[in-house]
Length: 252
Image 1 (cartoon, rainbow, N blue to C red):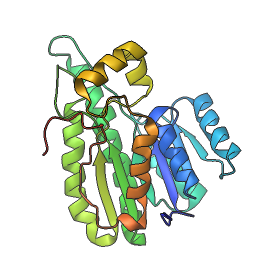
Image 2: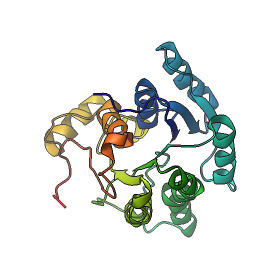
Image 3: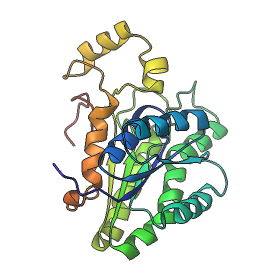
Image 4: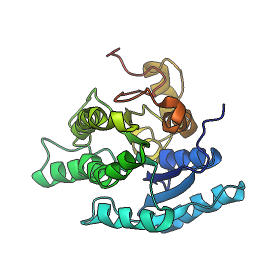
């Protein structure tokens, strides 16, 4: 299927590894001009080199911490200078924040800044340009909404999804869609090193908790992102779409 993405400009945050890397590769394969953002420059260069080696335009690299003061303004200026405008924003930067007890104020504030505020700031920096151009795709990678323990990274997932729904109603008439994707257990640095740290643990978890019977690959989610970015997906707006192999217990 031709997704009509050739020449579209895209920014992927948290793009140095895992889901972000796979999403950047998928968008580049569809013909997008891609900017990749993360803190680790060496890993970003590996991603860019791998994409270029497949014959696609080498992504533009932005070394930035999404929680830093002034981040959104700097990235907006960089994208404007490099591409002139942005069509697609993938808010992928974030992370789980398990804690002991009830956690500290600092832990809660850091988790909200990383997992909600950073994406909101970056989106608000670009969305008016998208509205002016009558096209935009904003996709937020969130996470669990069925808490299994005290984790400061979980409540921001709900905040992102509610904010995204509100934003989708405000900008939908301008050709801009806003959707959220909560990944299930998909191979990534976080899953493979902290949550399910070896193959035996992964197999046991999948047997007990995932109808698909295995831990997903980043590509399993990247294909949905690429479609949602397409002009063909113009009527899919304000949605929360789980990619988890059936792991989630509830239908709503």
